Picture 1 (tube, rainbow, N blue to C red):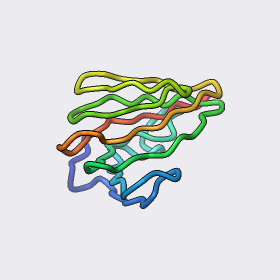
Picture 2: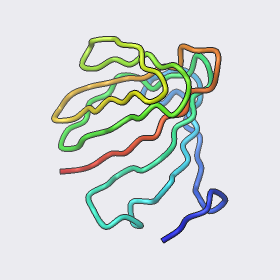
Picture 3: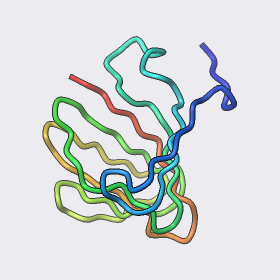
Picture 4: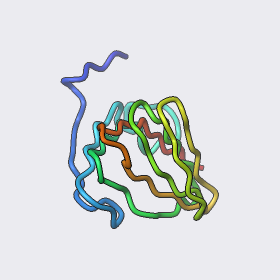
Length: 115
């Protein structure tokens, strides 16, 4: 299956999970298009100062892969800075958050796998 960018659903979520600004979510693939336990397969776009607030992942793993930009993440309360090419996985009841702390747009590829 091939899916073109123009066929991908995009949505905007203001103050996502209690964060700041508006996160643009481009659903790379819908969960119905994947033959597996995937709840989300999307590109997240965060402008400078935008964030997704701290939240838990029960019975699922979320993977963030930093495509471009600079992110401050909280990994179970421990803050780290991530750059293009870095990733973080959160699951098994763990919590995380992400914030664009750079001057450029932060682009993150995100996948949520359920179990």
